[in-house]
View 1 (spheres, rainbow, N blue to C red):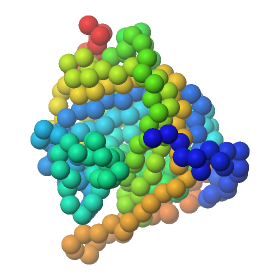
View 2 (view 1 turned 90 degrees about the vertical axis):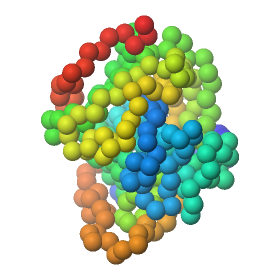
View 3 (view 1 turned 180 degrees about the horizontal axis):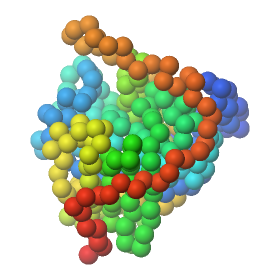
View 4 (view 1 turned 135 degrees about the horizontal axis):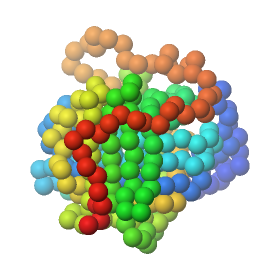
Length: 297
């Protein structure tokens, strides 16, 4: 699915939302993206998902999706976005296996975003305040080497996660796709859409090479419950992706069988954030017990 005609029709128009000015569409210049998908225990994943969001299951496995984008130019400047999500469906009941991959719209297929650090406060303000994405500022990098592409995510001087994939020798596959993000914010489940265009190098199963390291920061603890497999199911590198955010979002009230004991995070977390494009220092936490060589061997 490509960019909707409505988004194309408003190109060049202007918006002002939460003091952030946008020239539409909300889009990036060609920017590098790395992605890796790992198998996880879907029953463990369910504990991290709200009601009506279910782990997408294939062959008794769920899927952890790590996507890092080094935005080289956007409506709000440059920044890195490090997405950690669980592949999911949306509905009153869990979807049957496999079918959500074939009929994505029918089952609300997408990913539920568990963590989403970014480099700048303006990205936090816009992404969380407008689209409900769980953004927060973190220490991030994005490194493209001869043989690998990697990104490290630190917070409070501690490692949260490190992802490294084998760099493909070429990126021949054209992409024109849409993805769905589900996020929790303000006591609501938020659904947003992003459209990607570019050429990718994709590796599957035994040809996919990647390492995911979980650190000792508390934000890594929920991920450690997922029983993440050592071997990825897929890796992808897109050196020049163009991402376009839809300005259409959907939301539902989050609900549970008992009254919530504490108020969920709300607009107070973003309303006073400045339009600051300053990056924090690069991550420096050691990646203990790991030796990184040539993943292409």
